[in-house]
Length: 342
Ligand code: PLP
Ligand code: COI
Image (cartoon, rainbow, N blue to C red; front, side):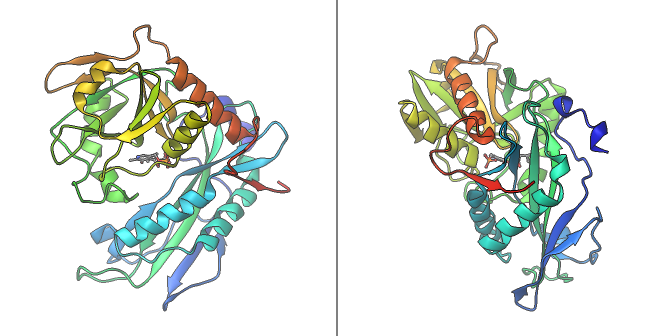
């Protein structure tokens, strides 16, 4: 089956693999890890995840290096973030060690789906947790199912590392000011679908959301954080309503390592007039350069990339991040978990 996969031309979509790994929380405790080859789950029609949105997820990647080793990028950060998401919507946090063990197991079991070095593709790991208790009253579940699945993926934006246009649209917010934006909750993505589809129909790769309180500051960019380069500095929004991106955190560290100052602060919309480069960063998006930002309400166009090419600092950061993930460069911050023997 993997022989039929064209590793260098994968998109970002569901591809069945051999196994997924599951664990139930029941009677106040997490049970044994179960390996499944079924792509479906059997659940009660009154489960809280179906009615009241008790669903959280994660996204991380494994890479095969030139040395043949498999590396999972920043596993600990995703383990921690899903626990934060769980606390945010009153779900049972998955113990960090259980999370790590299940992710590693799922990668091992599906090793034949890890794209080869040089293909540009990677193995996307999607952990998710859902409330399983049947109840119609609005309360948290007492039973949860945690599942880890994987699939080989290529670039999230079909353009890959080519600048795309994004848009600002004030008609929709994906989250509320003190809402669930800081957690990776399925409902946030449901709330983004209408705006996202409209943006796609108009030819944009994503929506650049403004802060939902004042619509004055930049927030984040569809399924990714936003960053920009201004006067040689890496700037990125500080906001209570965005997801703390592991990729953004990594790019900030890599920027500092290169001597590029980092500012994590409010970025007013007007500042877009003065930026030299911009990008959308995330596990799926990596660091996708932005060409132009169109404000659909005011008609204003911010031309970020004048020649239509990715900016030099964005390119440097992208290359450095990829090199660390693939093991081409030394992992000085200890970000990679090496999975032995696969
Ligand atoms: N913001 C949103 C809304 C996301 O869905 C993602 C993707 O996970 C990110 C930001 C980027 O986060 P990370 O770099 O941890 O993947
Ligand atoms: C990720 O980058 O891992 C995401 O979760 C983004 C998106 C595919 C929802």
